[in-house]
Amino acid sequence: MSKKPILFCTQCGAPVERKIPEGDDHERYVCTACGEIFYENPLNIVGTLPVWEDRVLLCRRAIDPRKGYWTLPAGHQEMKETTRDGAARETQEEAGIDFRIADEPYVYLDLAHASQSHVIFLAAMESPEANPGPESFEARLFSEDEIPWDKIAFNSVDKILRLYFEDAKTGNFPFHYIERHKQGKIS
Image (tube, rainbow, N blue to C red):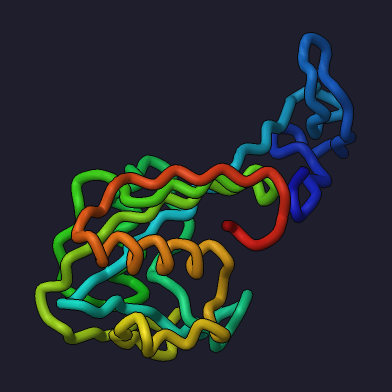
């Protein structure tokens, strides 16, 4: 179900109601006048894990939720945008760095409980310079022992960072797929 309920039909303006449409098996918003069905789909969160030498770049959020906490440059994928293009756009908007993005995803977090999919690509920074946009107070490079673990914005970011530093020990960065059905720490 939407976080913000749908109240009126976008086709005719009549009120909508929640019900299972004929031939369906999920409750949906359905227009009470014209019968338009409104399908709700998961959100794609796309971004990168930028790397410079042995450090990773994190952005300190200037927006809610979790304002003031550290995260990876990531956000909502736009319509008619590939996950890779969206990840590159979000990285540029939030971190303002020069980088080369990997061809394939590094981590895919399938978070059913949140109706979200997080697709994260590795990004090789061209220089250590960052020029964060308005959604970030600052962007900074951290080695593993410098990361403010108690100030990481999201459980998913914590997991991605821990995967990265484990992989860095071997120099092998395989694709990681993680599926979660319930809220809580991603192990």
